[in-house]
Length: 165
Image (cartoon, rainbow, N blue to C red; front, side):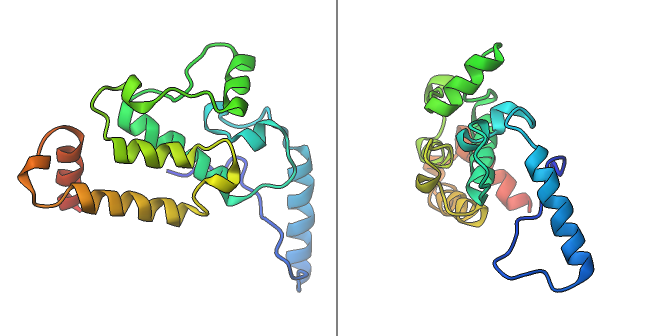
């Protein structure tokens, strides 16, 4: 599932070569200037997006994927408050609940991956969605093997899903 509602083209280091590339880039930059930190799905937006920083990086997407992983594991958002300003404050401060508190028995290795993806500092997150996906895959390899001691709860669910692919 991909939400392209706020998708923008990130400028490359080289200059656009065709007229259509120049028009697309100019249009994209105009859209980026109009986008404010108040647009988007707030709980999934990274601290830097809420702060309205101009530079958008893949780390913001990694943050959103971390929130998604947290929600898949626990069934709830890492920060679940009704007031918009309180939500934004907690995201910027990195004040989210621990996955095992939200859902006892939540797998600690996956919770650690979600935590790293939702780090307040973009530099402490996974460098890309691919790196995050690899961490999840490695975690599943380690915990969803043929070993019967892992055949309960969340790991069992992941193991079944993995074999259905």
